Length: 215
Ligand code: HEC
Image (cartoon, rainbow, N blue to C red):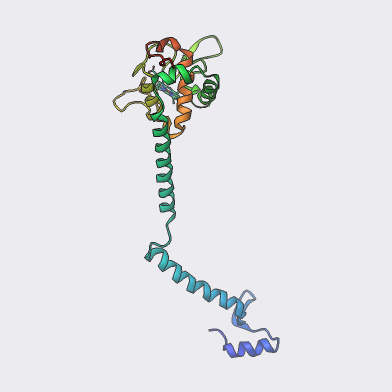
């Protein structure tokens, strides 16, 4: 048991140090009254804890980190969808083939996106192969984009959709490899740019797309 608190005050006034009787290995503990500022902070922290705990778990005033993250995700998804719809409202096959894929700035931006994201599977030259250093071409997981064969669709907007949403659910993939939905990582604008770059490499595959009406 600790010493009588009054004794503590008294001893403090006298500048005395009180030790607890218990001793171990020649070590003894102080038994002083703690300073009031320290006690005040300590008790205030306990009161605050009870208050905060009840508010946190008992009310909906404070959002949990999960709720905050969830709300942010929903907001981001809504913003993405809005951006996508805005772009799609203004985009069609004709615009992709004759306007964007012939615009050097657009194509250059698309090439940068392609280099960063698509080269590992579709290759630098879009052939879906890589040189093994001895002149032999090794196949990469993706499909060649310059072989004039389009597995799912040869319509630009169809390709936009394919890149945005990834392999269709019914696809069994290329040797089992499917493509992810790039809309999760790239903005609709970046997808339009990267597709413009792909189209610009094989414009002959898109000649059946109607030309823009002369103004
Ligand atoms: C991890 C590997 C991988 C990456 C990275 C990748 N792809 Fe693919 N891509 C594939 C595979 C695999 C297929 C075939 C999917 C299937 O058959 O379901 C495919 C198919 C395609 C097709 C259809 C080709 C055809 O002949 O019909 C296009 C277009 C395409 N990818 C564009 C892109 C673009 C643009 C990017 C970069 C933003 C990209 N891919 C990044 C693996 C990849």
